[in-house]
Length: 500
Ligand code: FRU
Image: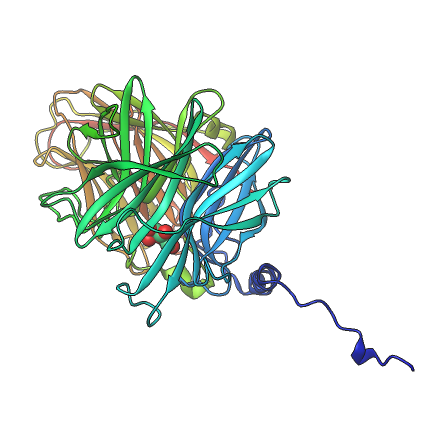
């Protein structure tokens, strides 16, 4: 008997192979205009939360919620990138694909830990029990996958199959860490319209014992706390989470959902008591933050630099979503201070000439500082600044039509990020309160094609937002109106690409 070529069957491609192929096929369609040069973004397709930020065998690994087939949310995969220095990143093959009976409709957010010589991913297996998208009929279980090489993962199925109460259906985003002899796991859960944070422990990552609810929400706290994280900093416990359903008030909580924290104490009975919920960033786009204890003891944090249901013009460019810069957290009294990771100075190219102080009314072009991948240091001398605006404009078009404004409003006593003319689809202002008695406000501003991240040099606040100006809108200007106050750009750099 002779064998025809039809008898030689190719092995069936796995879900991961298909996803990887779809990603490669999608690459030529990706339009580069808005793509970040030094931030993590998917090669093509969709990204949301960072999930699994971990240091494994001398390298930082960042996993993220990913849909490789289209630039929109779908059954979630885990994308994967790594870096030896937090600055230069490399894409790795997709780590997890949904499709088994425990994660049929999505590998939702979770975390990554190093267990001996194994890299372990703990994530939520999501299944729609009714119509796709019907949030009332869902099953969410916590699953484990492990890898020896940090690239290919073997799934072990669900390790927490039911929530502490069977009326809890929303049960997701396990964050795992090790303390003494135990692994601990905190997750988000929703009982009716009450958010709860169950805490578990385990000795082997497979068998988990429910300890108690670390915290829960009351009136005004929202209905679900996504992506919880609990860590010690400077002798205090910090509870970080991303609530859904909190209302805005004044200038606070203006985004659809928030990411913020409370500083307090976890007692021996596993109950957290702490101060008020404080937003970790005050821009338009910052969600689902997750932290990592770096080997040198720093507490690093990454977040999704987007917001659910906000305009995402890059979808038309066949990719969507990016992560914010890695940031260092410190505890200053009862608040977190946030700084761009110190390694990021390695992105700086030759310094650009800065400007002297300037305080005349009007705008002044800064021709030497120009571009879409920049770090700009801005100083605002607030002394005598009692009315008007003082600040800078970035991503300005030559015709004056496009510009993104960052200024101190002396009447409001607030630093305002105004993207009402920041390009495609986006709009609106975000701001933080500024103590006018401080004479010098020193800011570090990072621009990366479709993003701006503003950091107070003293770590007291950050404002992070997406922008979609034309690629040719590259100008920088100083702005002053009203009386008193001066602005300068003491230093600025063009930044290099962070992709290997
Ligand atoms: C947060 C989140 C998580 C969930 C994931 C799904 O943005 O809603 O709670 O695990 O995204 O992609």
